[in-house]
Image 1 (tube, rainbow, N blue to C red):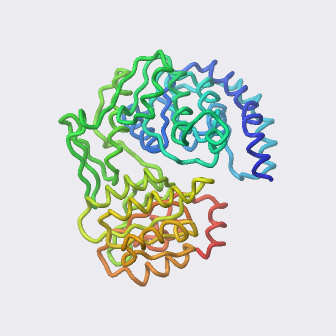
Image 2: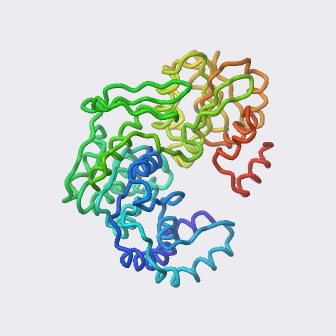
Image 3: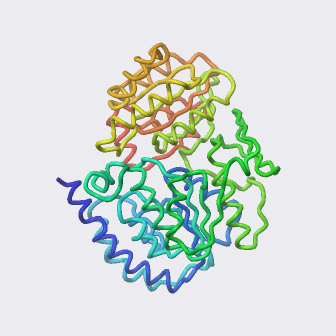
Amino acid sequence: MLQQIKTALHFTVARYFRFFARIRLRRWDPHVVLITGSNGKTVCLHLTEAQLGASAKYSHHANSAFGIPFDILGLHRSSFSPVEWIWLAFAAPFAAWKKPYDEKIYVVEVDGDRPGEGDFLGSLLRPEVSVCLSVARTHSMLFEKTVHDGPFRSIDEAIAYEFGGFIEHTTRLAIVNADSPLIMRQLHRTHAKVYEMREKELLVSHTVSTSGSEFNIGGTVYRTPFLLPQETFYAIVASMKIADYFGVQPGDLSRLTMPPGRSSLFRGIKNATLVDSSYNANVDSVAAIVRMAEKLPGEKWLVLGDLTEQGGFEKEEHERLAEILCAADLTRIIMVGPRMRAYTKPALEAAGRDGIVESFIGPREALTYLVSEIRGGEILVFKGARFLEGIIEHLLRDEADVEKLCRREEVWQKRRKNFGL
């Protein structure tokens, strides 16, 4: 019941903050660059920052109907308590009239995680440039009614339509993944110029190792110490196109920084290599990580958590995941969570892959297994929910690397403790 009330009031409350954010945004009047998509948008934001540097303001840690107005107003949530909302509501009118930011470019990451968000945020930001990278089932549960009782034939179409809302509000240049038919079907909604990114036309090669990634794009080689999947190619090309749009000579990736939980590399106990992509997961992002892991040398273990926020599509998505894992070149698959055990594990066992599969309900049990089974030199790739960052924390060779993991806030520390971590 509480969740239903929160969902019903979501845009009603968000409109209050959007009203004051619009005042400050219009007074500021920056060139707005909007980056969206189910996967890859945070990486693209950081890649764009590596190109534009201090000439732009970036919406780090904000991508939602609340987060973006807060970012524009300079407001920040810290305690995540109900009382904090009273202070935020009181502060918003005053924040609207604060001195605008000095930067003339605003690069903002935007999620389309519920029906109506495309128009809600697109009409606020009215981006000069937009980037649309991908369409995947990240928050399927919020789109169920639009399929069962609404105008769309599939969840994928419903999610793509929200991203199309951002494209529709774009005024000058839309940069899109042209290999996605779902995205391409949204282009009729915009009058902006469209730049289409196609892998076969631009990507020459992609290689990975335990020291990082290398992309050959149009004959230019880009190297980074982060372990990035091949699909990151779209984000790299988009960041270069944004730089060119603003008259900045596109450069290498030497200034690239990455947020925690997005394919960071760590040294683990017994000389194991840990690949931390634990921030979130959906079927498409897991598939990308698996394809990347298959390119790595040596023994590869995939530690995979539940796919959350799938609603009535939960069983279908976990079974789709099993189809991908059945063909994957992996030494072991360690699954964490009740959904993985209920849906993915049986499908893998039926396909004859039960010999490499281990399943645990909780992260503590998975951690105990990993500590006892790691012999030395393995590559452990972490992807998904169920507090995988808490497992990684106990496998690090250097304890100081804990600060580089995701979800360090006190609220998450307490939740991990409740799960035995």
